[in-house]
Length: 85
Image (cartoon, rainbow, N blue to C red; front, top):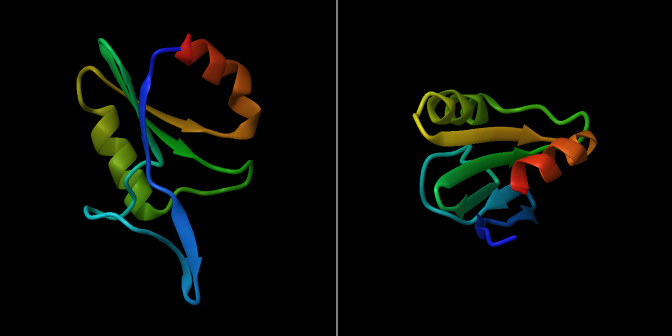
């Protein structure tokens, strides 16, 4: 559908899940862009909860004019398709 995407995959370590990237903790899982839109997306399981760092990113991004922030779960598949068309 013409979107450019960036995703940083996490990996399991002996002490838990870690994502190899530089920056502030809690950065969204996925960034998509297709002119004129930029989407920051946090992906969670049905019962997954945002960490306090993820909540801070959500708050700041949602307050930025022109930036779209989404928290998507599997049950949101119809809304996801709608947002990306």
